[in-house]
Image (tube, rainbow, N blue to C red; front, side, top):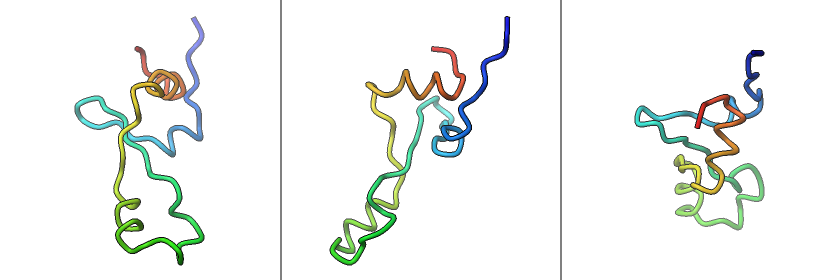
Length: 66
């Protein structure tokens, strides 16, 4: 059986928590920040969780068994 390669872009973007959940960064924090409020920018800094609908695709890219 060949080994499963981890997707290089996915391993830079996602982290696995101790309980097995997968965290991600929020979008819309890279540019055009002048029209966004300070509260919105602060909340976008925090990490979010990958939704259940995307969990299978992300796990496959990371080489994690379902």
